[in-house]
Length: 363
Image (cartoon, one colour):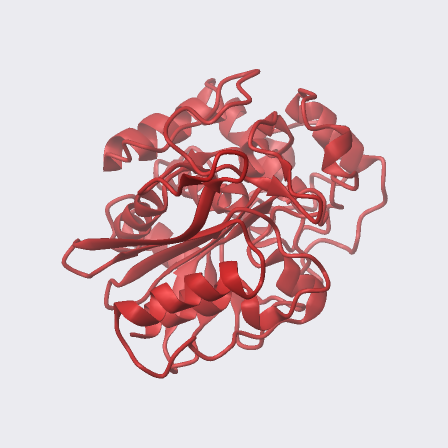
């Protein structure tokens, strides 16, 4: 997320113009997913690759390739936890929209209403524009993550870093992905509720849906609590599993399993977390220049075009050590794919986990 200057869904795609490859095999079925993961490891050098696929009836399958720990050769644990980076934005946006449904936040209200004096042009930026990435707020992260791996930061420090730069464009006039939007969204949640954003995400979503292996790391917690495959910093393959996730905060701090992400997507799109009016707002999309053709951005949720002519709702995430891709189709088939290192800029787009996600969702 950080080394590539973003925690965003398909961050590398935004930088390279990546388009989703055709499924890894013309033969439908679980074997195509496994072959895709095998290729990510054997042909393209990822330490490990994992996928969890959830059928519309709730039944799930887990696939893996590679090793979970390069130092010991330990296998990839079944449904191990990973840092999900910008997939966190789906959770943050859901909480904001829940508060909209409760009448505590106005989606088209200026952010100045909730954070007076915090953002210089806060009277011109709406809550919707934050969640939609049309606010023009600049990106806060421009450092190599190796320099701050174990450093804790407060959310206001992240915002101050962003506001030291000029706006990218006048609010509402363009679109550009910026993690700063979700730092501000998290601050609004805290101001409105009087509670930490991680606590709100926990009781409003994680506990409500029963995501037993998803959690918001506490202050100073650099570990991954449950079984997990190690994550690596590329291209050096430095073990990067332990880090301080405060640099992601409401834009990318959560830890979860692939199966839990699928369960969350099913609950979200199935209407268990938002009233119909707020879910409809979340799924109103705008063009997202720099992402693959026909992909569009809603409110913390992307409409992902698939090679089979269908589409999926999801939001991936990049952080040094883990890259996550996820989506759910209208018929309720969900999939999450993870690799335990970020792709290098030299690697071919066709090897990215997006292609395996496409395969899993197009079966």
